Image 1 (cartoon, rainbow, N blue to C red):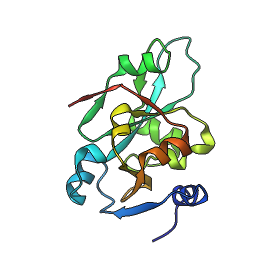
Image 2 (cartoon, rainbow, N blue to C red; image 1 turned 180 degrees about the horizontal axis):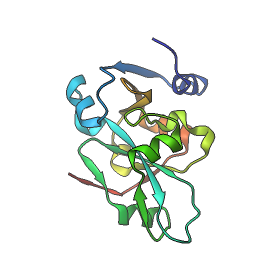
Image 3 (tube, rainbow, N blue to C red; image 1 turned 135 degrees about the vertical axis):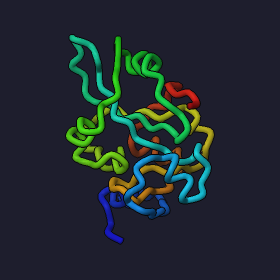
Image 4 (cartoon, rainbow, N blue to C red; image 1 turned 90 degrees about the vertical axis):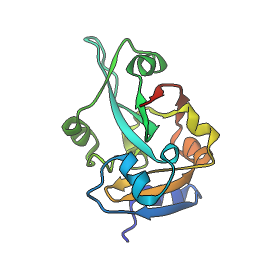
Length: 161
C-alpha cells in the first residue's frame, strides 16, 4: 500500500488512523459502508460546494456528510454566510480538487485553504471514515482529532435522505 499525503498529514499531527481498502470502482459512501460492513452514519463523503451568486467571489468549500444524508443548500448558504450555494458537478469538482470523485478528501486539499465543514452529528461520534484521497481507500480517524487538524466547522446542514 502506497502512503498518501493524507496519511503523512495525520502522522505529522500524531493522529492515529486505520486504512480501509475496497474495490476502487466504488465511488459512493453508501456503497463503501455496505462493502466494509460499517454503519452508514460513520462513513463520510466529501462534497465540493460553490458560492452561487452573481457577486460571489468566495472559494469552494468542502462539506463532510455521512452516507444516507444529503446537503440542505439553504442551510449551507446560511452557515457559510452566503446568499446561495450550489453543489459542484462531478467534472467541476475533479478539476478544482485534482482528485477523482469518490476519492476527494479534505486531508489532501489543505494547501487550498478552503473552508471545511462537517455535519454537526459527527461530533457525537468517536470516529468516522473518510476518503484517503484516492478511490478504494478510506481512513478511520478520530472525529475530534480530524476537526482539530483541519480546523473544521461543525454545522447543521444535512437531512436524512
